[in-house]
Length: 90
Image (cartoon, rainbow, N blue to C red; front, top):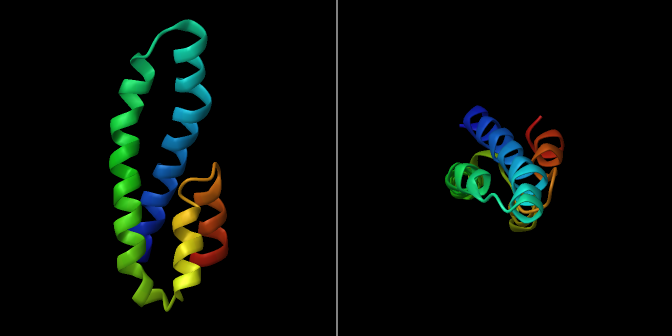
């Protein structure tokens, strides 16, 4: 389960960075929302999967509620999932 969570967290982080730093500027600078539409749905699915897996894996990893909160917070901070992987999953 830990490996699945690591893979999902990696892809969630990459999709968030692509959406935030590539698709959104293209939308507002060039008026082309197609990249946001293309990346938005996969990112949303990965985000929800990340949240569910973090809650499920909490018991396996013996995380406190505070640690779980930090792991969940990492999903909304750019580069947060990569930090979380290094700090809590290795």
